[in-house]
Image 1 (cartoon, rainbow, N blue to C red):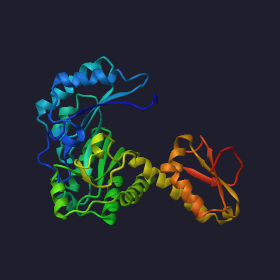
Image 2 (image 1 turned 90 degrees about the horizontal axis):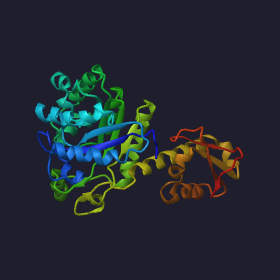
Image 3 (image 1 turned 180 degrees about the horizontal axis):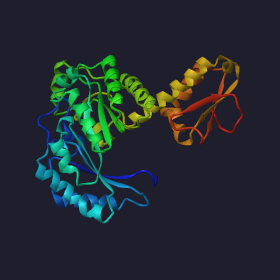
Length: 350
């Protein structure tokens, strides 16, 4: 168990506080909850269950996921936050985080949460292109996101952003422009989700009529790795790529179309490492004269370098059949790095 990784206790409030349904949304399906709001007893039960998994982890957060937290009534917001406070006071939980719409961030709502130990606020930004937001029935604008991040930072809150890939009316140029605009606002972290066509969503109707064409898996990987490059240049961590795997995601009656893969993030990171190797090979022509090359990578990133079912290594072998590639684990490298050189070392020959 990684003691540095926090324990996150999830409490789902699907659709609750949302003024309308976004074109892509079916939160009940994603979270497996039919009842929109848990009661205090359900929250306590969830907390107690997850605290039993804490082990030696040093930090515990309770997260209200789904829905639109600050779109709930002030009484409901304080009721939910108050239900967590005994665990805060007993030092069993260290912080509270929640996701909300950008247009719910105002001085009144921030005054409401000020007395509570809110460790992070995640904004469902999705895009910074107003035409894309309109086509997605988001009901807010890019200006709302700009104002929200400004207000949250002035109050000292850690800010996360959630972006989507494949929204109606979006394309590569607008997506990357949107990503850069988000990075310029300097959020603390991000999540990126490829859009899936979920049963019961308004988008499902458009898809069945032929009015929406989802991205394929390869297209989404190409786009997301470009987004990742923008975030990486700004040193803003992307903490999640793709929805979490579940039985529902492999059910074709529930997920009708879209770039679903249970290890989507792994595919993106693998492609990024492969690209990094190719760049080094293309810019260092002298090393192509070698009959063997070492691929140095952090031990935790070896599987990423290998790719899904060793796909990356097989591609390298086909492109450069005269070269033997040898993987060397190097703790001095970041998990996002790979270094190609001719230096000798112990590794795994392929």
